[in-house]
Image (tube, rainbow, N blue to C red; front, top):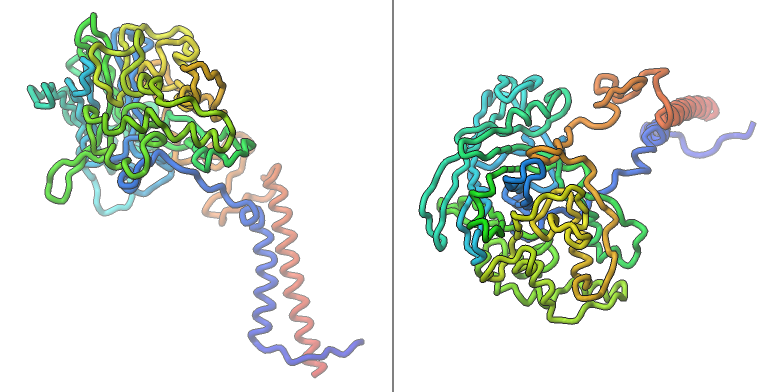
Length: 508
């Protein structure tokens, strides 16, 4: 036997040996999660510096379209709070009590609202001595287990040159569908949404609550347009995230100036109370992507605080846009000649013969010609594909506004034909055929653990996250085998360490 040499192991070196053995087994057992970290999420709707820190007041998207199943009505949808992680408890995503959510309607094209629909909110807490959003399964909106209850009012303001002529309350203390906590808490969320969908006295239909984010796109585009490498396109960055939604289906006759002038302009704003109690506009949105990719950083907050009738301030950003120059520098696709009057018609005035109101004042807003009936065969590229009921004539939920906007910005309307896009052509969840049309929100409980399908044996908190013996399959089996082998190796190392230590003591 070869004599062992070296200093006598002390308590620290022995402890290090034992810890090393245990770490070897533990790290190997956890190797799958350590070697394959979850992918980081990309950018969000947060288009301007100030509003990015106020997500409850950040309006992500606005939609306006002739209702496909009720063509004598127009549906207005506006969403707030970008990137709602469904499991984001314990507070989840309440509507702010110090916020005003407004949708503006201009019926004559002068860039001044003639009607304003205003949502305000109230919150009631059943039990302040628990951290729980709900204290048991919620089966109805008046369930006592729903601890956080929210309601809303809708006021309709008639305006003349931005002065209030009259105010009418069309919704008073109606219930809001809660955040979709998970399947244990809300086993039938559709029932809750149906209960929150209400007929109003003026002939409108209303829904306020959570929904799947209907916007679909690959936000990796903000990584310098993929840096010239298109191998990673096609991932819907907003998949799995929810938003707070207000949806209103209104008899079209209440919105338009007359049958001879059926074009309405639509935009939304959010206001909140400042420290002195005054209301301040903090967000504004009409056409998608304008503040995100047309307005430069220095003026984004200014745009959010501005009104459409002052949009001449931002005209140079439309006639001389930055995006085509970026595309040319990275992909060598020649930018169309300036000034871009074609973009003025799409984003600021409406397209002549389609959705341009008479005597229009250029302003950034969705423009919808309500006399164009819904399409029996909607096309995701809207007007570019011959479907005049789609974007930029208003905006439907399934309109692929990213591909449409990219193709228009690259000269589709001035003879530079192209097929640019982000390879995300549809939302990850199917939209409904009836009001409120938006998809149900993603549940806070997802995956195998939540589904508990046939043959599955989910990990639980009660067994330390391990899968019961004999129930693993597929990749889980490999993980368990690797974990068992690693644990065995750890025990073997500990045993060898103790044997060596004892032998060392005898030799010395």
